Length: 257
Image 1 (tube, rainbow, N blue to C red):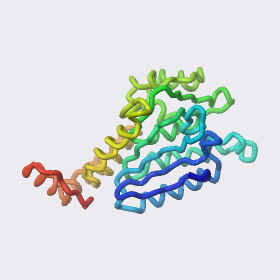
Image 2 (image 1 turned 90 degrees about the vertical axis):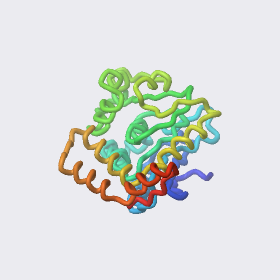
Image 3 (image 1 turned 45 degrees about the vertical axis):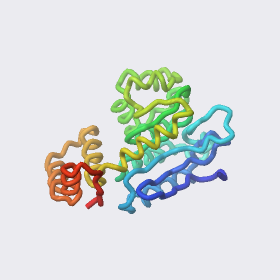
Image 4 (image 1 turned 120 degrees about the horizontal axis):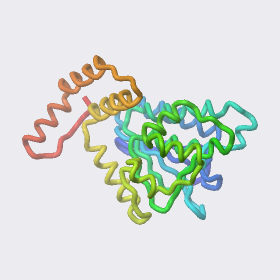
């Protein structure tokens, strides 16, 4: 695969976003960030997409790096770049489909927030996670801090930010960050299994429930909105199909309606 901006590929109900600058440890330029925002919009507009996978090309790297975060050279041209970067994990977190991060390399800086913005993560053993913001003199942007505390807890977030420690994936596993943490040989199989499970769910209920859970986690509990989504699902063809399939002991054929 040639290096360049992230690509978007569609395969049935699955969209795959791939970071493609392995020689730069998949650090993200302004061009890459704008490309990702465009891909997110394309995904949101395609109702057939049920799951979006975020992965990285690590070909040729001595030690696999999923992403080293924002390309540091960009800070010189745009000192406010970290505030622009915030838009990308925010948009990723709000994607309509469920998101799955294929974390096959170590991850640093702002890229850690991309991982946290995904709904699920399948990770590879023997790799590490580091947030060097304070070591660079940077107070991180608000939504990133919220995701860290929400997903990792306060003390682990302090270790990541205030101590700037390199954290082994194995040490992060008890925090519940990973759907699976597996050896390299089993990585693709674990990813495929999780992807198949997500694609087997009723897409309308899946996307609405994801949205409701994220709103509740962000302190945006809106009971009328949640009840409206519940009513919509009860009246959906998917719910009828789900009940019929359960009664007939067969796999449901959901249409997202």
